[in-house]
Image (cartoon, rainbow, N blue to C red; front, side):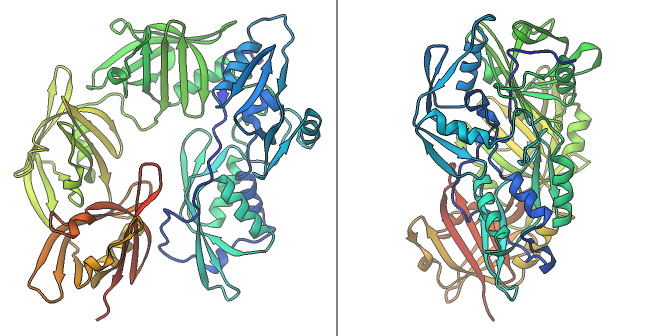
Length: 585
């Protein structure tokens, strides 16, 4: 039996991805086999088209059509109130007005003209309600099966190799979002282009987990198994009113939840509670791990009322969390809690986070692999560039080594226990930034966050053994000398500054830069690693002009004789392009 939940909203997982540039951020390591070429009328090509279709169910409260989306902003009149809807958050305002009274007749009028986005991402301007109704008639009815696949999506960017009739690669096209993928697959289906998808590809499932696929067969099987594995929420209201107490309970218990935003009594306490982790267990027990590693135990329960779904938390020594919260918004992998008076919690699911941190667990994590200093802020200064290409290795006998310019510098480390949690102390000669007492604030496989007053450090695990892509990159880069064939800093061509220099990458992680005519050398460090893509970190010290190349570069493409690297800004725009070419003997 389903319980009607008036205030519990479930936002669809697949939000609109903005169409950006078309050829960035993908590593082309090895060309795919001819057998991997996409067939115009195959089931896989149909799956790619359906997976990249525009899901129009998010705004059903406005247009009542899951195959259409109304482009924002749009003005609507809801029960006599005019509302400008300029974000998906405003759908909740419409829902709240509809739910204000039990016995009124809810009515929504759209102010025309409007722009409609269809399932194939095409757009059409409509000037009246009659034109909209004609398009709505072309859609399936409420909750009827439709053609789009919403329960699985691609993790972008992905790339396709494009071939001529002799099956020779003539181009590599990078796709950044659903719209670009849908349009490219349409060209494949129309036999306008011969192409194959470059693997591996990471797929995002509805529950927030990911699956890596390595060929067409795996991709087709993965999409087929996942396409009906979630509720597509094609109701004509906003959110998922079919979400039951039982489903909510199971959803809370599936994995730990990490706090990302916290407000209590109109006070923003996010800095205090961010990355607190809650584990909802059977028998209504909830275990919370605080930032310093302390573990608190409390109780939890849920119920459904006229106000919606409620989650009650009780902790004896933590009053800020102790409240009966309205579960007012649920997305895949995210829960938002609210209560009047300026109270709000946003939590994200993290199945890898460790609730019960122990000294032994920290030590075991540290000894698993090498660790990169991904972030280091000391007294407000960002110093992570000094640690590019210099991974750390922690050993059983409390010895830690850091690889600098191809040589291992040895020091010691200690894991201690304080009243406020666990600490990591590192003692390395010549590395005062690390020689601090760091509190372990966050621990999960592959990631350790450390901090103390005014200082923060993030360590990310680096396990190159068994990674074929990293093995290929290492094999290519240590063979022979490399010239800087091109260096573009924005629109400025700086290639000439690097003429007559040769770069030698050694297997030990040592870089040596030599001048063709002068007795001159620059020493540095390098490291190829994986972090949501493949990267080449290079550090040349402070010598000009190579100090400008100290960076963690994303590898765009690599072959035995050429490496193309790119540097992106925070908003995803290309800022610099560096091309290395093998020097011919």
